[in-house]
Length: 333
Image 1 (tube, rainbow, N blue to C red):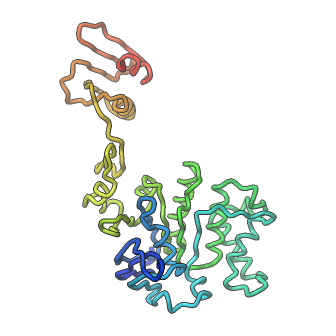
Image 2 (tube, rainbow, N blue to C red; image 1 turned 180 degrees about the vertical axis):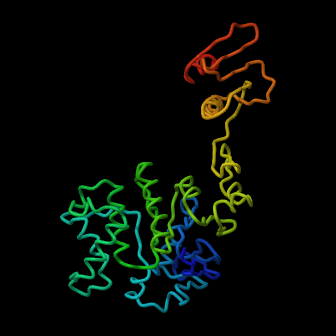
Image 3 (tube, rainbow, N blue to C red; image 1 turned 90 degrees about the horizontal axis):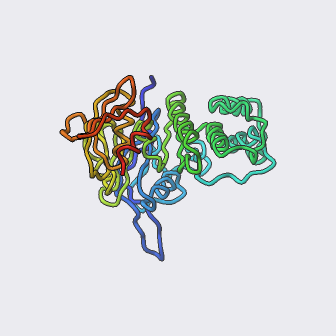
């Protein structure tokens, strides 16, 4: 495994906008480091400043104060052309492109190196082919961009950035507009690329559960503490995640490292069993306001057996059902 390097270092950075000769600070001061070979996810509420931070890291917006170092050199000392060879960007907006094939669009990633006419030489074409292969879209190479699905189009934009051969890739909400399987596929792709290419991949996202399962590092951005960083596991253990996403009706489960909905209960049952069926029954009952556990002394007993789901109630005959839907019909009034 390649040794990770400090690729982006941020020191006392405040971000925001200049409005009528005065500065509007959105977030800061921020001090942190982004490493090579890692997928880092930036989480935060809408309007908190995630896009502003990404624009500042690409020098599209100037920082209000503080410093950003890329590979040990202050970002403002780079020319626009040189910065284009260091930082690749994938934006949220869907590209409105017609009459262009996948290979042609990926080839545009070579523009920082090809000069005014954008003619690809043999080496450029090899780099384009390699980028397409890394993202595993060889079968799409001759397809037209406008004919692709949203997930396929996002893969093409990532391949275009890979063809740019930058050590850093920044993405703004790369899974927005995608269905769930495509979201998972894109996040897994980015994680695999960070490992395989040793690139620094930093993205903003609202897909909390995916980020917690796939990201190497998490940046939590809020108004109170600006930025908290760490592995998902460390942020779970020190309480940062549960505090950060504390909302009525939402609980951070420290045992699983994921969030779950807090339900209000008006009934209890004793549930005996094990395995997936036990977990699914407990989940369904919880959703319907029924707390189920092995320890409770509730009058209603539910046992999972080979014959089915057996319901024992005081002064009533045993009832056996085979599905959770039938169980709910028996218990939920």
